[in-house]
Figure 1 (tube, rainbow, N blue to C red):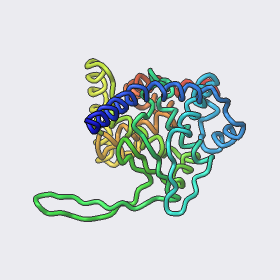
Figure 2 (cartoon, one colour):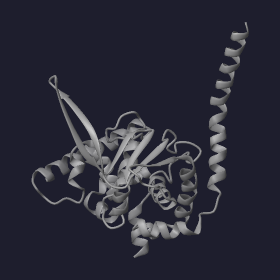
Figure 3 (cartoon, helix red, strand yellow):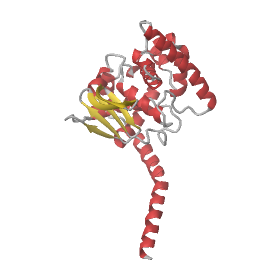
Figure 4 (cartoon, one colour):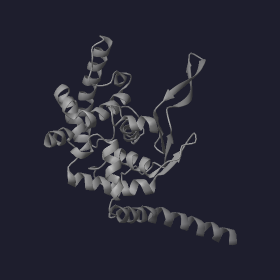
Length: 278
């Protein structure tokens, strides 16, 4: 009888925790979001994010609020001897939060809720891979600057994070775009969009643009989007996201329908930020 009572108490306690946990998390997030941004954040973000000054002030304030939550809620783990600094945490958080800054429900929910940790290496890292085709297993290694392992952890190279300040390749935007792509349990270049009509419009535009890029790459023509985007649909979405923020006016001019779809998804129009600051 005693064992039965203990099991019942534990079950009720677990059920109560699962009910209360989202409420506690929402309240905690809202409290953190009200904290003022430390003075040093501005210097760090201007040094690492080339378009930071272009972000409208009201949007920047909301971005800072989300970052207050992100840096407290997510575990940053230094790898291969790297000591993760507050500056590293803040810069990674800024890019991650920018992708969801106007997302409905954020920060109460839909705010990287499944993500537990960010592993940060000092430079590019090596991963072991195996591939089986026709019963033959091929072992190998790849050197990576980032990897969205699953929805619980993301791996980044700090050296490559820093490179975003001087070029248009952004490993944080890339890997967090993969996270958003995986939220519907499939990394296929189509993140959660809501309605069937939205999916149909997204699919029509993205397949047209993806195939167009593949043709241009095969023909050896220079492209605005990194040729890596033509390797598979998931990479196309991630690379397009990088370009959307780093070269928004160029993307709008060269791929207006693609830009429109990204604007609808992210609920942002970075091309207008750049124009307003010129």
